[in-house]
Length: 306
Image (cartoon, rainbow, N blue to C red; front, side):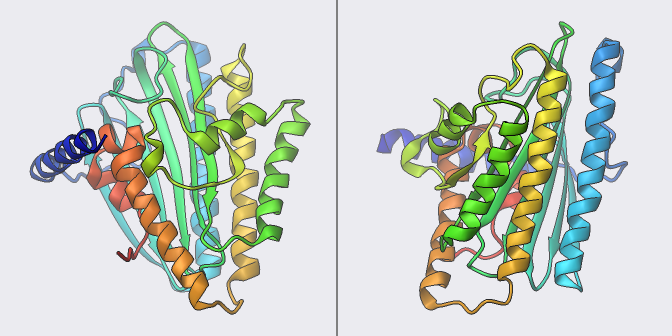
């Protein structure tokens, strides 16, 4: 295992060095992808894409707006990167309450390696927010939703909605769980499988180095919620994404002024380091598919202590 991890780490360093030499930073429309096979989409796929793009734009405005409400003065950084498989648009907000809030938008142009594709991708969007509050009483949210359209006319939706706590406040953890449970209940769906996936990861996950989420959200990197309908699954995921993220921001509002202890600060530092280790060694997409330059800018904590 150690030799395998050393080889994997060496490959990551080589890839990161090559990427730093080769990547180009571009400017352009936020939602546009320059090399997509637009003529290969069906009418149904086009409708899904239009609906998803509208959702992304609304979430973009909503959650950066929410960060500005919490922070007051907010500084922004942006970066745009291209690879052989995708174009990556990243935006980061920094402030006094939300210390760092990162948005990653991946615009897939063809099927990348080691990603949850079910076919030959002709169009895809990966959208995520990673929020790092200043207070150690609220953990990091990793909120992902993605849609892929395939050359055979089919499509797939997936996502990951969870919180990595430092200090665990039972009231807040229960609130997040109840929020996700309510979405499943409204649709008459059982959350058990998706809870198992968020707790254990996928078969490609290296558990020794894995993040430690509170098992109250859900991972949708598995069977679709609606096996027969990507449209219904996408609606479910969008609903879960917004309600879970809204609930998470409510916990920041609730805890932002509460007193903290040295134990709380130590728990936050441990959690933030565990997230970095997960991205380096455990998450198969971060460590092997998404460039280091992308995920390090977009989702890693603003300060990491070793």
